[in-house]
Image (cartoon, rainbow, N blue to C red; front, side, top):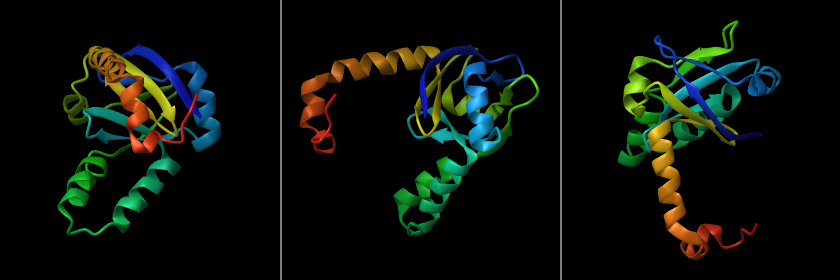
Length: 150
């Protein structure tokens, strides 16, 4: 559903203009209602509201006394804020979210299937270089990739 990388700028108030090519898709899919939250990898995740609700439900079904579940819940649900596209197609990224992800003015909005990831552009470029260094042999050895082919 969501794919591609868009290099964008946050304005002085922390607003992000969603690319026009994505606005119609979001309007149709989720009435432009989004949830912005933190990802443990220090980026932000921008979910269409229905997808976030499914993630939230799954987390809430996990044992609340499990330390890993509590830690992940604190990050995913604790940083979650609702966002609706304004008339100019922008959403506000809160100061706490910008600080968590280390966002500066230049950002990368990356479509990764049912959501977007929002990265500081320099961190995104570094993340891509690290992914390239993993190499295809290491990916092929990962049991989660055993049945995947291009």
